[in-house]
Length: 229
Image (cartoon, rainbow, N blue to C red; front, side, top):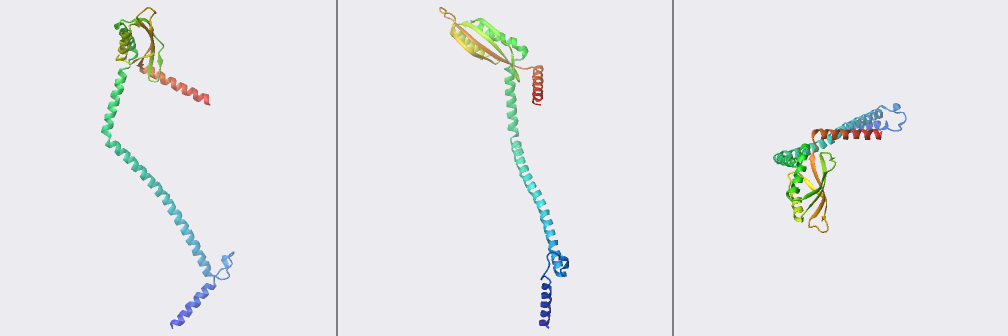
């Protein structure tokens, strides 16, 4: 009985396999039922596999973006954590910087205080028994955030008195520098010396001057843009 069943199964398998012989690849519509079913299964499997891999690839791209975002968020968290840990120290540094800026601003006179500063420079020379042959403030040069005033000086006096005068100018509460210094005898027979120099002092700009500077820069930028066009 078992042998007869085996023979029937073998014949059925051979009959099924014979359906795949001498197939016309150009016209699958004339194929037997078995090959056509197998072809349809292969096509369906290919479509399913292609769709599945396409679906997975889209998720893979999203996963890659999510992983990159995760790394960025971790770095942001570390940066913010360091800032949070050092917040008190940063606040103290900020206060120190503000105090330093305030201290520097106090060394720059305002526009209204320039006359008093010029008087202080003059008094420093008179206090050291120096004779002023020339004390001529020049044209104010306006910079971005401050203005510079050059003063042409020519004084006569003894060597040590001139040295003390230079030290007195350096110790003024306002910033004053001596530039282009030239020291020579006042005359052939004189024991006094002549000091030629340019003193430079600085002041901060008032709000109106700052606005004028900003307006001038904006106007200049617009002019350059028009010129490029």
